Length: 249
Image (cartoon, rainbow, N blue to C red; front, side, top):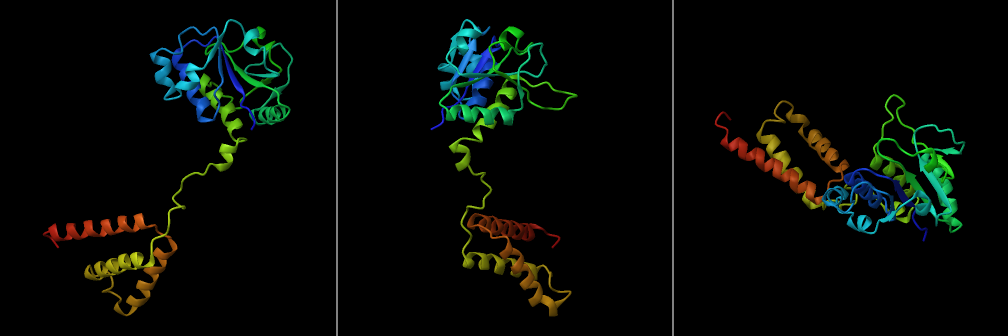
């Protein structure tokens, strides 16, 4: 199993920002959070509330006095920054960074993504500990990302390469079993009966068989589930009640 990258926050200022980072991390299966001289207690009420259930990430977070100590046991460190610096380093986008990270983990190397202060980002001194810079391409007219957003972009890129992502399916209802034919036909019979009572077929009585066929084909194509059939029954019954209570009918 590929071990996950770590997230390093250098001098984060607000506990709630740390909490939101923890939440973003756990969304994507990352659990190792390292903090360099945080200004506020990340385990205070603000931090725990903001993490929205990612308590384990917050409680296991390690605190370091310097960047040097925080990165000491990593083979590779990528620094996330949107600004150009005087230091000459390779600059990667999120996808290229993650491709390099996957290769590093295949060699059993440890990788960390480092993020700076909310207002000022990483300093040149901070960047001196990084192997490369990661820049997240966004709208050049408004390139402001908050700390948790930046972490989420890289964390999600990592998640795409994990076994969880391979097995994840977006629920769209297509896995629900189709309704039995007898349930569908019962609904269609009820629908036809109510349409006839409301005069739907009166204008073209000779075409009623063809219209009924078209209605049946329409609902057959929908591949309705049993729950959806029940919903349609409920709609018809509601309309029937409305008809009975409507004195103008």
